[in-house]
Image 1 (cartoon, rainbow, N blue to C red):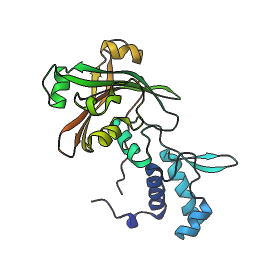
Image 2: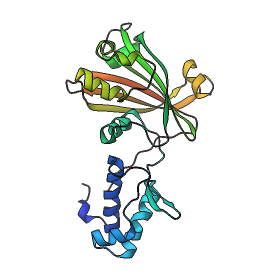
Image 3: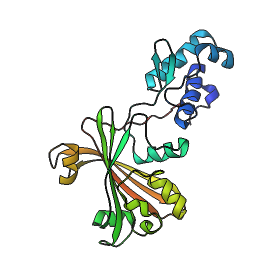
Image 4: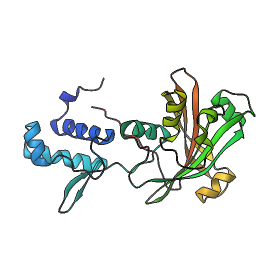
Length: 245
């Protein structure tokens, strides 16, 4: 069983509180985090303890020191999967990280292949929505993401078939228009050979082994709303942080 937060070392407890505020969007990237003096005053701790708080946040990627300004909030530079984008969308209205951009490569109705049909629990060959997008940051291509949704959703959310970024991403629009709120997901990390159409965008050889993240989402009626497969860009890695205290 995890320790109660009050059982943590004071500097870890305070750092965890600030980290939660950053992840929720209460403190945005580039905003000042509480200063050493403010932490000492508000938490009743020593200078040494307050100093360690900022050090922990910097080490975890949640803060950076800017000369002449102070310590500012940041978000760790890690790969963002669809499930992370859903969390960020609900927290602060945006599914993108600071400095990240998306390019929509396609949005169409296509016949469901066998794996897509199995995932969406439909008959093979029926029309499903396919959206493909590429995510980029200051290092280049982050991931190439393809998602499939039940074809009937295009009738209530016609924007799904427009090759442009969606104002509330697929999650938000499907919830707003169809009332289908994502309540459960499954994440699968696997090594897969890169197919020809994906290889062209990733800039790698066809058949090369690549790290992938597959996501399945279910709504409140236990029906699948989306199936997505992300091929990570060359040199990228998946990471996740868990508190064990």
